[in-house]
Length: 131
Image: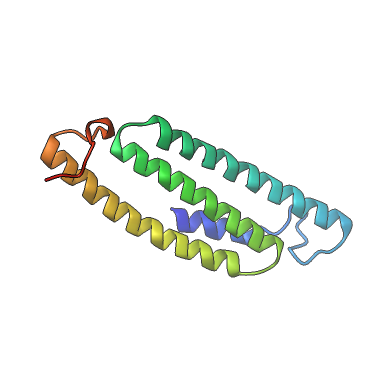
């Protein structure tokens, strides 16, 4: 789902329908307005993710909050790449998606190990990773 959303964002150049190569003042203003909306969305997702990491004690909810933070980074990368008419932002977003997939695998393995050993995934109960 993240890859589809990033591809959707990469396809949006400007709001006036002229494409991303329109250098008129109206086209530039529309592209800047579109980028501002994407940056606002990314800031909201980032703040929600940070709140989730700091306030939640459930291991799975913390992992989901980290995913929100990484998706906010992806939106920023693609938005700035579209503004500068470059694919570098999309390439970096693909790398971030790859790292996020690895993070989910390792994080869920740790959460399952905690649940198996302590019968709870509450992060307050985990003070040390001793066996």
